[in-house]
Length: 421
Image (cartoon, rainbow, N blue to C red; front, side, top):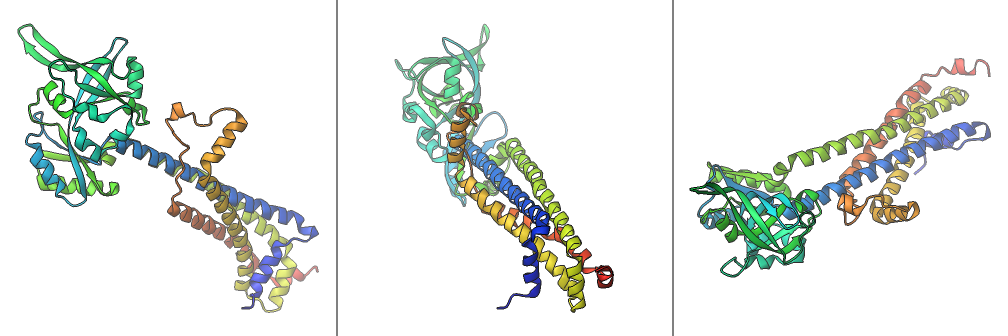
């Protein structure tokens, strides 16, 4: 298929002669500007996607996709039948009861206020990843009840263990402010537990303020009888959790209510989403500036090629053809820059952890210290739709940048251009 003369001339104008060398350098700068902007956008969005995925995994490793609770302070009684009913709903994979309360933990070295959760060790592993988060000890040891001569087990976070100065198999005391009324007044409930496990989720908020005991022990300690605080529910698709939660609440009705994992962490994910949008806008300005470079490059080309444009028009070229020549030239600059930027961005995003390792070796310090950011690896998650959007937007910007210089070229009067030739 023969090449159209507009495409041929547009590509030829990119090949500068000696006297047009400055224009050629400007074209290269425009290409590099577009490439830099696209590269930066892909890398930053990949890193932010990685952070969001890492945080989501840590949250879902600690809490379930949906929780079902009941209005009032009496809790949910006859929860076994309710669990079986919940399991019958579409997309529900499993469910587990839990008890939730705030207490104080005391050790020989320190005191800390924490949230304590009573869980069923058998079914809890089906709705959360707490079993895999335990680094020392075992979840199964919670099953041992604190009967005569034995001490019930408790599992605490690594940061909480450091704060309390306690280790595996050491005793700590749980104190509940919801005490027992005696002739001497309100007496706080107190009970000694043995640390049978230490978990590390990777989020300071959870590792420093969360503890687990068995469901039966929690019911006994908080004097709840056979009731529980709520039911944790796991679904087959985390992004369908809100829909499932709504269906369960509508079917069960008052006094039951539900919350999904996104609603429970609304502030965190809203902040991440807002930061991602702002970063996209800021880095998008790099591509915008590069597009302005294309405008200046094309204006200089039009000024340089006045005589050529006049000759083409005298030979019968239409205004539309002249516009096409300069649009093609600008689009080639934009497309080459976008392709180079996309390739560079994808290569860096895919090999981010390796590159970060090399940078740390060269600079001699950790770019992202693991003990500060609680990262086992440098997070980077490529999202194909993000890459496609970046490429499309970059090319569209470059196209829009070509319109004014191309229109000015098409409006050139051949007689005026050739008057002094």
